[in-house]
Length: 167
Image (cartoon, rainbow, N blue to C red; front, side, top):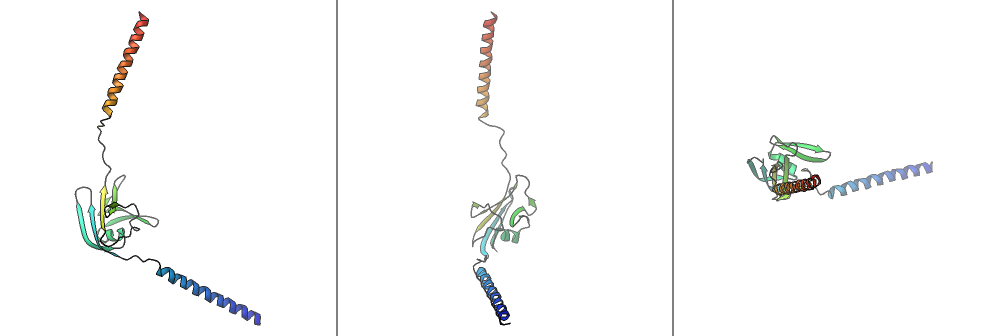
């Protein structure tokens, strides 16, 4: 009977130690989690790509998604834990057209929910369209001239060679 009590006591002590250790790990993880604080004084500019530009001053938020959705109607696509803004104020990107954002003049290439803003950051959204290429290619003309002269030269040589055989 004494042996059974000792085993139960040892198991109970082990469980208590395990729980205490787990709780201290959780508290330690929470204190080092680096909770995201809200950035202040954010400037937000929206360029709709058609001449319409909207400016917002002195906004607060922790991420690009927070700040943008706080003042604008946004359509967000989620890809697992990553958010991408597909539409702003009803203007939705399609095909090669779409929304891109810059923070402090630098293009940002990460999901809008992962970009953490700092105080006084400048956020710019642009609706971009692929540039239409001009159908005129200045390198095309010299190529055409070269092929044309080469072709005429070839025809002349073939004509001369065949006319000598006939005579």
